[in-house]
Image (cartoon, rainbow, N blue to C red):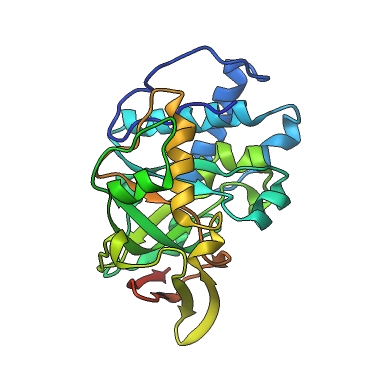
Length: 283
């Protein structure tokens, strides 16, 4: 069972309903607090499942939502969503048969012309993604690839900055879901391309660290089609009264493997037909 996302800009979870979870509300709250402290203090913790082996996916999403609500109460704003575990290899590694998801908040956005302090994060990594920006609301249940293409205002080159508040990325499925699908930040490049102007299945992407070519992939590494990931997300959350709205940013998953980021790293991702995006790290 998958729990609801928060709607973009929302201050509360819509369409609340009772859920059957393994852990008590108090235990989930305590685990959420541990993750929140680990993130704010840059002090990673051991896997949650070590002490809570019965923790399941429902518990994990509840923990994620507790911390998202906490941040909204502090003035944060939801600007979109991310899809994780969008490759067959990652799903097999985690023992699942579908992706997971997390929230993108306005204060997670970083910029090409402003270096990011690596010390802000526990174990930062970068991933290369084709970002979708919606120009219209998506339908929920029954959302198709055609619906996504019609509703997408443009796609853009992007780098997702991921992080784990779990020591050394020793995560299981419940750990990463509870940790907001390991989200930490994102940057969009300047280029904007309408979906009708590019073949979204065949976008070659190359990631450079400085002048070194360190990773490469293609857009169809994401569920065979990144548009599929967006339509999956729209359908998945529809049963909980959540819709993907005009203006939302959706990161559908990485074209390449994740790369560790350290102070002094200068990353640049080049996308065939879509442009470039860069992200620099300092101390």
